[in-house]
Length: 248
Image 1 (cartoon, rainbow, N blue to C red):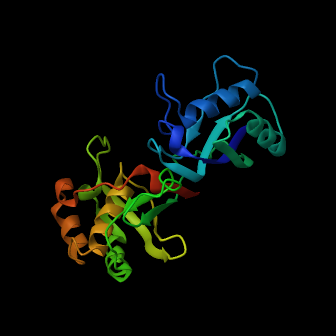
Image 2: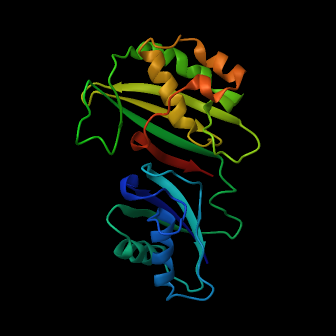
């Protein structure tokens, strides 16, 4: 039977989602838990995520699927996984799905959230869960600029070196920003059909510079046109990024 799970995790102490030798990863701890539930079958059960998150990046709604050689109800699977998984990981929902479902290859869109804390100094209680921007920000400048990211574009200026994909063309269905004055944070949200390596974090860094008038408000169309990563400059910290939702 094929199981689809929605997973949340605190990425602070994970070396990303993808399994790596001698590293603690989300895939690693989840795979160990699933195989333990199935009583360590041979060959071992593989798990498939909707995509990778980097070291320090969090998830509110990561999606994973796996096939189990034994039959368990959805509620029993939920309880079994959460009894084994570490406290920085929790399964929020379990669903038995058709064999045609694939966590990675049948996605329609992904939604990411980025939380940027403002202020001169880093808040020690937020440092693992937000980015930080010490310069004054005019939110209206970011609101004007962020809409230039919507649509289908070549995002070559917004992809980090190390990306192995051939095409940098992606579609952003919706991009928005709001201010949380109570928390002194700016919250960015991006919903698109896919995202490149560090793409969200680079977009946030560019938008933060625009908000602080360190970059022209109409600079995003130029960056999309030049396709030059060096001209986008910065990358926002991983700590503020959350994979919020995956749609199918």
